[in-house]
Amino acid sequence: MITVKNLTKVFEDKKRGRIVAVDNISFEVNRGEIFGLLGLNGAGKTTTLRLLATILKPTSGTASLDGLDVVKSPEKAKAKLGFLTGATGLYARLQAREMIRYFGLLYGMSEADADKRTDELIAIFNLKDFAAVKCDKLSSGNKQKVSIARTMVHDPEVIILDEPTVGLDVITSRAVVNFVNDEKKRGKAIIFSTHVMHEAEKLCDRIGIIHYGKIIAVGTPDELKTITRCNDMDDVFVKLVEDNGNVS
Image 1 (cartoon, rainbow, N blue to C red):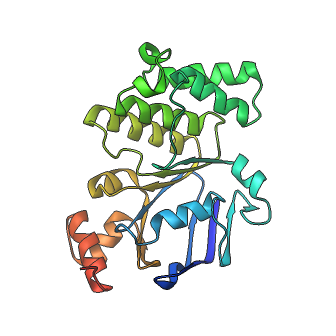
Image 2: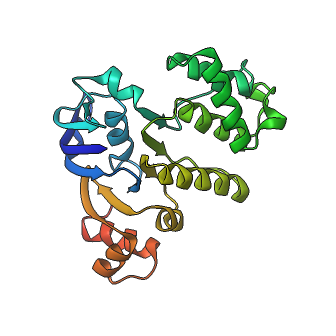
């Protein structure tokens, strides 16, 4: 469902010069699989996700979503994708329900289908009591629920979630994680980015560690523990990063 081959992104900065943000990475995510992409801040994780979401164009290499090349067929690829990033805000003046429905219409859904799907997501995320509340008046947890709902409104085959549980309380985080698991069971291909190692261990079928723009390890949580001889995922991550040149 998601195929990444030799993907590279180079930025030219006037002060810092040539910056290789993503360095010749390759991986695949299968249907019905949650792939965790973990890395330190500045490791190239978010750049990778933005390349897959067609927000950025790669310097070289290829990536495809459900067989659609993100460079050659960006609009068709985006139609298959649900992408959540912390950089995407909600429209303050729209109510929660209006926000979700609006994105359904943007994705080309009929008004009837957008209404039906919006109602489904409001129920799934327990937003019924907040559906008529304007987005700027919502709590941070409910804002995140609305953000995820509008990401999923068109029922995409490919899902990319960049730190979807950051800043959320335990109950809201659990609701998000349960939803992601349900989408996996429905056969979706999911990339899940997080800094919470126990969350990645519990949720992800496989994990890729990115460091200095390179994928330095890929495997199941148990495989990564075996490779590093560590029993805790925090220790696994630190060990892999240190062995590949830690950032001071």
